[in-house]
Length: 492
Image (cartoon, rainbow, N blue to C red; front, side, top):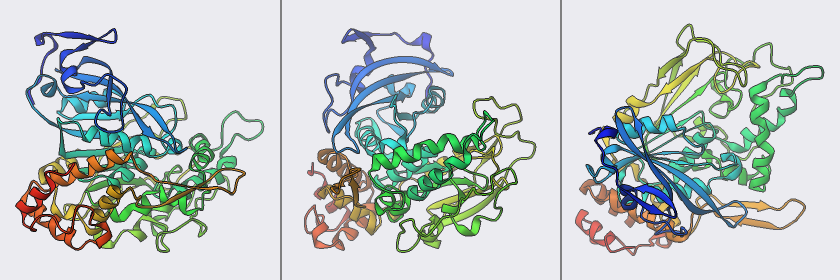
């Protein structure tokens, strides 16, 4: 990618709503009026340039609308970081990295943009991702993928913790996805929220002290009740499972690289596999602390853990040691003082899921997601996935069924919400607006069918769909690659 030094750019500005914007922003984000549900989804609010290393990248803040958990609509904001070659006109499209759930910090987003990626992240939303639910991210990813200068075959999704939870839900819903890197994601949110709530008082500040017994756990556990209130359901209900990645594993078909720590007290290893929990707890954790996954939580065909639901052929499991000499995760609100490190995560070149279990020993009262100061490096995996491209195997029968249901406005997993103090049950569809759903599905199928082998594979899978799911007609063209593309091309 060609870097552009700030001094070499001749800045041309226009004025929209009293705010100056670089000229390139008018071309890439022309809409400045109120956003709608599909075509003009992103309304440009502000745009500027900044240095990222030796490159000048673009930064754009946009507004959009989406559904919410109450059944109404709400407004949200997004921030885009654009590579230098895109804003200069040197390239016509670029790969997209969507940062799920949380807002990606400016430094991290700028570094990715300097490497040539378009980066999209939710911006300035006051609610925790697990409290606000998936609607905002579903809508934003649809809008970002729909930009004419985003390459639909080069979309990656990343996120950590609640952002990892969101990344998995988005990976299940979206097609195609080049790669997904959900770090320490809650797999069964009903269990994880129930676990947090059950241990909230145990982790709290005891009489005569000013410090919680388990400070990180106590802080994060505050979201358990608001999350379930927002979902309008109980920890142990099928509706809590409906917003859990565990209930969507059959449609996660893109390459996934994820990790979990043996010492994590926020996302316990119990929801990954009971057999992986070998070191119970440390002596400084209260005796009544309990991470066990009980049978009360809703299951997928009787299964409640990641490795029970995933077919063995779908994943490769790695055990990873922590580099020696690393400092401990610092106390809440304090800066780290010890040595920090990086772990390059291993991955499989044959399996859909690469799951690393980082052995940090038993959890203790001072743990967060990890016990020691280290970060995960996904770059080798991402570069491998980019070199491989989208394989035809990413489209499976369940994935195509889910795409057709999206066209019909039917959710993959149904969810029921009950208003507190009322017997009224409300059914919610965890979906975007119908026009946006249709546009996103068709765009993905058309991009997938650009290669002959993938197009033929799509045609063959489509013929085998149940009649009620053949939303695009009895078959796609004459079944040949060209016929499939010709059948898809006029669809809007």
